[in-house]
Amino acid sequence: MRNLKMYEADDKMISLIRDNYDLLQSLGSFGINLGFGDKTVRETCEDNGVDTYTFLAVVNFTANGYKSFENDEQLSVPTLLHYLEASHAYFLDFQLPYIRRELQESLDEKDSLGMLILRFYDEYAQEIRRHMKYEQKTLFPYVQSLIDKQPINDYNVDTFSKHHGATDKKLRELKLLIIKYLPQDGLHNNQLTATLHDIYENEVWLRQHAMVEDSIFVPAIRRLEKIVKQNDVTRNISDMVTKAGVGESQELLSDREKDVIVALVQGMQNKEIADHLCISVNTVITHRRNIARKLQIHSAAGLTIYAIVNNLIDISNVKL
Ligand SMILES: [Fe+2]
Ligand SMILES: [Fe+2]
Image (cartoon, rainbow, N blue to C red; front, side, top):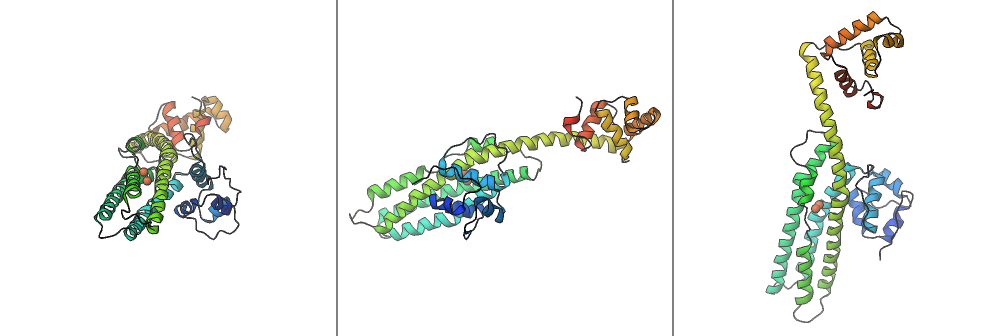
């Protein structure tokens, strides 16, 4: 029975699990081990190096259903990426083989219908494997490259989300086949019932996994994409500015020259700069000439860009 409660950082981790035992597996994928005693969610997350906010976002979403994460800037993309990678490993390396073993034990190997069911399951497992491998080969490395602020390739998250289809059709069909047509001898098969129960849980798990990807991960990547792309533009401008400067000389600016740039970018005239820095107007002019020579930048706009990308000034202090 699901408990509709939004969990918070100060709640005890154990109460969260008591209310939602299916979160046990999520803990594992977050890298949180059992044995947390009476610690709160925050303490447990901090002990395990997990971002508490992101953990709670996923947990509350999984336990209570939909919430919009479109403008949620606090989500940690590295935490989500790690969580999804570990979830894949759990499903592919443990859950799929586990259910297969269970099925094998419940089905009569000599029964051709049983064998067909197994073959059907293998096809289903293959489909899931393909789905997850695709994400591991394309989406996850792409997200890692965004996190590392590496140059972006042609891929983007919309390409992914457009083709991110449901994976539970085959599983639904498999369940129906088993329930409606097996066993044919009319005898109750405890093992088969238990396996069916696990398959149902499996289906829920996969649906939640896809929902976390679509509703939390994809919007978070989209936001990161925007930030990295913006930085990329800034970096390109920076490269242009640097290259222009490096062409002639590699001379570094003196601290005084940097002060003059900051003053210029703030919109001060020569006289104001002189007063502001307690130097003569002639000295200001000399500084400006040297700056122009060293950087090969002559316009106010060019100096502004240079000052921003070299962290001489914050963009909010720039007179535009
Ligand atoms: Fe996935
Ligand atoms: Fe997926």
